[in-house]
Length: 455
Image (cartoon, rainbow, N blue to C red; front, side, top):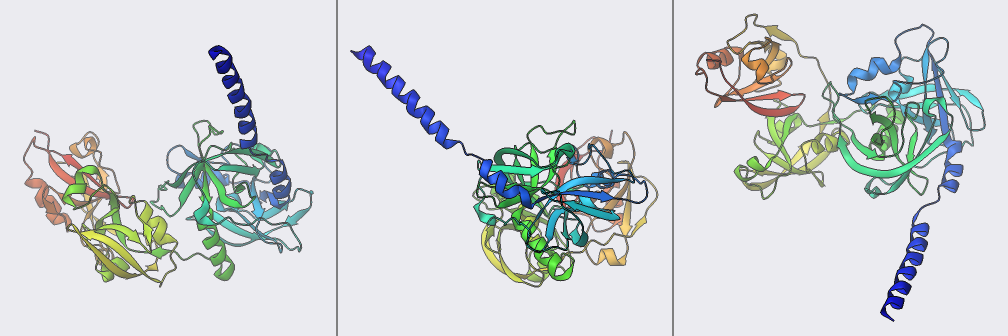
């Protein structure tokens, strides 16, 4: 009797398990049929045969985060590239990646019904890699943006585009992570990328990532790959960034980002207790630019920002993501921890700019193997301290410590560095064979390590 009951129990569970599993899998057919007419194929033409757009942009993507156009088929005879995009309004506005149309002399848009249009660039934003195009037509199909705060890890998503020039291909997967930080080689880090395991390949760049309601949750932008093809790790620009960029490009043809004027670093478990925190979280302020919004608001080096404009700051990379989406001139509040006590400050967000520093070089290496530079008067007025590393001698103490050209040294031993003279005096006083702490700024991040003069 027991054996019969167990057999019945197993069969029943298998049956209802199959039913539940079958009902749990979504059907993508209607979604793809409804969304595809608003997805476009983009062909760019360059009159002169020059280096391809993806190669020009590749230096902006770190390591093995490769541009989606690195491999493609069917390039136009005069030079150019192909990619994807999607209509966001019935009167012909199209969103795509900036690198898809960068350097183009002509832009041709092809719809699902094979109609073709010449497109003009309304505006673009290199920092987010987005471009807004316009074609002259009315009553066009269009996709809607999803609500930014509704996306969840594990949610089903669909990508539609033209991978390898295979028009209007669809692929499905789930959201793997939200808020991925992928700083460029230039140090820009203003896009909290959406990671998914959707099969994204060269040619999908600029196409939409859709939820099961058919709304856009991201703009496909980069893949993680050593071969150039999909391995199930892809990144999309989130709708929160896309909506803000589109609004600004439509209204003024450019994007103004919020700016705070700080260097930050993560709070690890070793720093947690000394900073008076209950757990490792927040953005530790390593340096404040003189005259910046942060400086005017009273933010100090050593503060830990845990919330800005009502949004929690979990890691240091969250801070530029949040600040970049705040309109310049807007007054917001920041919650921070200073010497174990919580404070709230009002901050008027500034406008982001990226001036290239002008430096004066001191042309002799020290016994650590470094040549450092003093900055000019304009640069001195921006930062309270630090010297710029201009050269690292091969096989030197600095080389073995991992110091790179372009780093800014702000502390040596227990002493802050305010000038090259102070730095060189500090180096001369270093004991041989004994490691000392060195702290530096690299692409906006504070890094602490140790270095020693070889005995």
